[in-house]
Length: 221
Image (tube, rainbow, N blue to C red; front, side, top):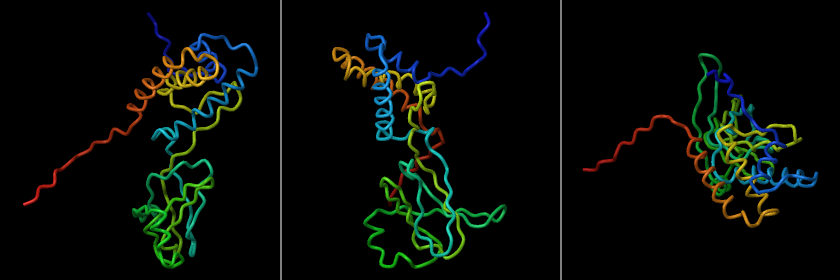
């Protein structure tokens, strides 16, 4: 028998909502229910940002540094910065130098934050307008290269698909069903919460880097 030959299955927002309501034992009958479900969906995305790394939301960013610059805005959709380097040169002369991340207190205690040199430390202020502060301040032209976690995009209009990797579609449906049960099907809250947590754990365990790791024990004499 022939197979489809395609691997592009996805769910639009309205299909996702319909599936979630069916798991609650209901049929979506009104426009307000659709609006309520979209609101719950966006809150679910925010909850995922607190549950750990979502690999599909990790992006590389770059910021140009010029002499005297010691801070750069990271964008309001930045959740956190995972790692960063200072890049000098281009082409075959390009060099990336690792910089250390320091805490807010460590940055605060630096006596002269405007002293200039090649930046070797970075403090990330995780506010509503995330900002990266480098120390020393740049003494010339450099490029700050970093990997950041960005926010999952909002659901938007109902014909959109979600900004979610296909591996997370099952737990997205079960998570939305659980959120809707809190409002519309209290008798199913326990069951749907259990299904959601199991689906999320399964997806999160798969959503990881698979690079080789070598552990060498420290042996003292």
